[in-house]
Image 1 (spheres, rainbow, N blue to C red):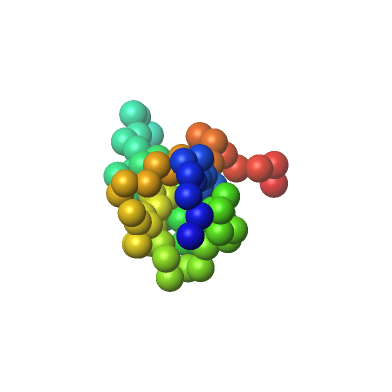
Image 2 (image 1 turned 45 degrees about the vertical axis):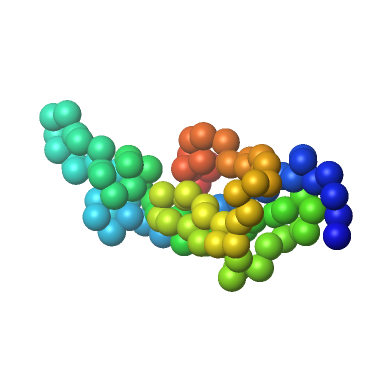
Length: 100
Ligand SMILES: [Zn+2]
């Protein structure tokens, strides 16, 4: 047992994306006048398909210990609620496209 792990940190990285099928990657409904942001991807145009979680205590967490949704929210499956964990999410906007 290790005591005093009050500064445990989880660092989340998005490692896989796919174009949003609802808006076909546009991020909105494509209207010429005042396009409405896509509800499914929240205007990002991309959905998260793969996530990497690095624990400051245990290292990279196995995929079976967490779950995530397409919007990039990560949920620990075996999480002790008494433990303070600082979650470090990717900087917003994480969907910024690099130069192509
Ligand atoms: Zn979309």
